[in-house]
Image (cartoon, rainbow, N blue to C red; front, side):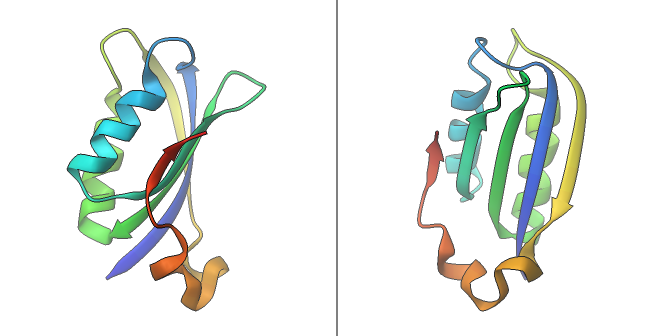
Length: 96
């Protein structure tokens, strides 16, 4: 089953290679979407893919790369917000 999740990660996640870590893990788990820095110091991620693979991806990003510190992770399922477009909406994973 396909799912799309919007994730906000707080902590020491900017300037430590966190988005690149997400990019590499997204490739590993066949996840489409993006990771971008937000003005408040957090990182926003949209992960689109098979539910089990998205779940595995989320486990990885909760840990993050060695120089990061993930304080909290907020997740929101946005699959229904994208309706039928969700399966084909994201064609790749980007670092924005």
